[in-house]
Image 1 (tube, protein in one colour):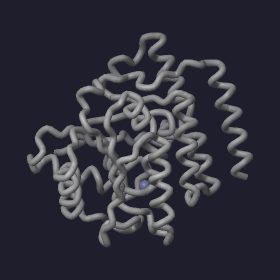
Image 2: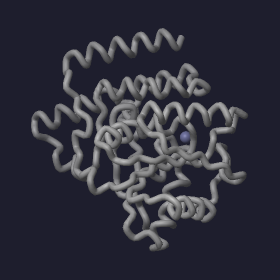
Image 3: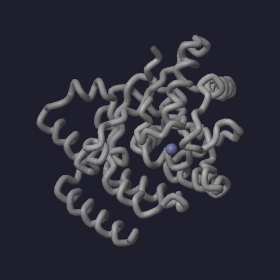
Length: 258
Ligand SMILES: [Zn+2]
């Protein structure tokens, strides 16, 4: 089943990319890489980085921005924690990131029914920032793309850190959660963005959205990284990889701190 889906996906992408060959990364690079300093991606589970954040990670790495990662759990909800840790390191390595830390905390575990305590999480993030020189943080918004409560807990905790005033220079951005029809717009998303630039639409929208777009090579790298998450590659995840906008495009907004 998975092989069949792969074949259909690759064939569709090859045909479409042959029609429009020049998708560029960082089409809307409105914030200059030189101002980002050291960038930190905070995620909840192994595979979040690949399924949701890869267009931005690849874009920053390709422009020599220093990228670090903090994953707040080892994804042990199915008893596969140690395997998923290894998968995370291997996936990040394919995305070009070697500085990866996985948190091990009894109250911050991969569990869809567990509400992570915001104050506890804020303290953990703050502790990490004390030991790492970070200028820009990228994470989920309060919908967490998939609605997973562990994802949604991160921006709430990060807002507490930002509002504490201890790190006034740190910039923080949230990955915008889109409604379902846009979320599953797949390869149409980068093509429409590309088209809007060709015809001169959407330039203001681009400035507001801080959009990062993968080209075909970036998409294929993301697929390679996802193959490292072997424990997660059940049939419906192949559908996600084929049709998710987040495999191609990331839209960013400043973190809500109010
Ligand atoms: Zn997750």
